[in-house]
Structure formats: structure tokens, C-alpha cells
Length: 375
Image 1 (tube, helix red, strand yellow):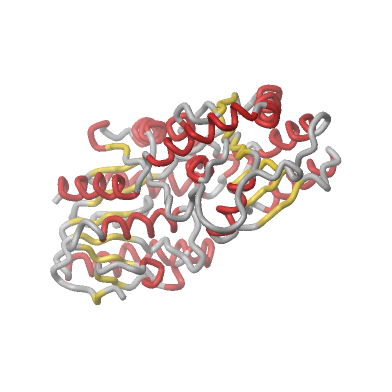
Image 2: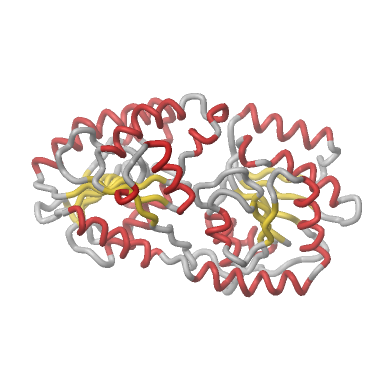
């Protein structure tokens, strides 16, 4: 079990974003804390979910349960108030020398060096999709980043966007790629695995939002199905209005029996979805990183993804890259994966090698160096 808060912990980690059922940002926070804990002995982690980080030896400080992402907008406001009040007081009282924010939520005017992680600036890239978040990024995130000694981004794409959008000096913004959890996502082990060519399915993993380009994916699937027996599994949830639009497109294209919608699943179920899929398809118009690409590759699954935003950084030469706005190009790529077994085997080998280069150990070492620089 984590230790109680100690005064010898020089570096505080704001991991208050970890909720009751962590996804996305919460999982990043957990994996980063666990990896940092293996190489540092001077940490205190602030979270309402200490059990989520087991096993670690770092001290744990409380953050409000009511501030978890589970509570939506209300939880977000409570978390921000806690940052500016309770966490500020604890930083000074505990003699902390640096604060690491695993998301762009920090303490304004703290007077203690902060390192802040920005995963993407999607609300600024696609403002109609994020009517509230775009203002939050403009007025709060901008202030947090300007008051951070260092800003860490998940990709070069996001680094350039942060520098441009927030007018930060280039020297204060650096890239540290997240890791891929190959202990969870891998091509070996017990349980069902391998493609079942009697049940061929493409897999989409991600939120249901307009910039994710799911409508164009459905259009491509309808064309592919004229010549191939296949289906699509959509794993993820999203904004009700866009989810309704996706389901309407499914009906209009006559794909009711060809598209399966799944909510968020546990990691073991997701691993099996990857391993049995003919291909992961992620034709997003904009990604700050694109972790599903690496997870699929780690499971030995071919990947089709967009040639834009951060996705080429993640995929390297190990995926079929397409123009995400070109339905014909996306359709052609899906057909190639179904028809060309040699291509699939090549993508499998390249993908396994690509995913293996993204380790949480490397992520933690680079973040640790950043913390040492600011202290």
C-alpha cells in the first residue's frame, strides 16, 4: 500500500484527474506515476483513488472524491477550486520543490516550479465540437501553461500547436511520448487470439465525436461490403448528438447488421478485440497522440490510420496511411488489408517493433529529467 504523506517528498504529482473508472487521461496518469515510482523516491501523489496506483511506494495525499471526472462539469469545477486552495496550501506547508500536472490543470501563481503535460489542443482545433472546452483552453489552460516552468506534450504535432496557440517560447515546450502498456496489450498469452476469417471485422477504438471521422468510416464500410463479407465494431462512447448521427448513418446505409456498438470495456476485453480484428481503423481528422494505434500494433493487429496530425509520429512506417478526408482512399486501404495477407503479415511485424519502442520506462525517465531541471 502507498505510504502516508511524508515531508521528504520533494516532488508533488497532481493526479486528481483519475476517476472511478479511469480512461484516457486517467490511465496516462496511473501509468506515469507507477513508472516514476520505480525510479524516484521523492514523490507525493495527490489523488482520490490511491488504490488505482498500486503497487507504488510513493506517498499519497488526498484530492476530493467529488472532483473526479465521474461527476462531469461539477466535478471539474470542484477539482479546479481544490487546486487553487487546498493543493496550494499543501505544496507550501509540505515544502515541495516542484509540481507535476499530468493534465493541463495547475495552480495559478504558485511560486513553485510546475511541469505540465498537454495531451492535445483538440478543443482549439475543432471548436464547434467543444463549445465549453474551447473557452476553458483559451482562458484557463493558457494561464497554467504560461506559469509552468516546462510544458510537456505527447507529440511534435501538439508541441507546435501549443507553441503557436499559446505563444510560448519553444525552449519551454518539449515532447515526451507516452508509453504503450505491453504487459496488457500483446500478441502472446492464453485466451482466444488470431484472426477468424469467417467473422471478419474492422475495429474502431475511440470517442464518438465529429473530428473522429466515424461517418466517413461507415461510408467506406458500406462500399467494402459490396465485395467482402465484413463488419465493424465501434468500441467507445461519445456525445449523444453525434452518437445519434452515427446511428442514423448506419440505418441510412443499411448497416444495422454490420455494425456493433460497444461501450468502454476493461483492458482484457479490449486486448481480445484488437487481437481478433482484421484491422484497426482510426481515420481521425486530428489526434494529439493516438494510443489505440500502438495498442493494436502491440497485439499484432494491422492498422489503417490518418496521414495527418500526430498519427504519423505514432505509426511510423508500420501502418497503412490514408488521407482521412478521402473516402475512396480509405475504402481502398480497407480492401487491401482484406485481400493482401502478405501486407497484413508485414504490418504485423512492423507494428510489433514500432509499439515496443514506446515504453513507460522511457517516458518516466524523460519526465524525471524535466523535474530535476526545474528543481
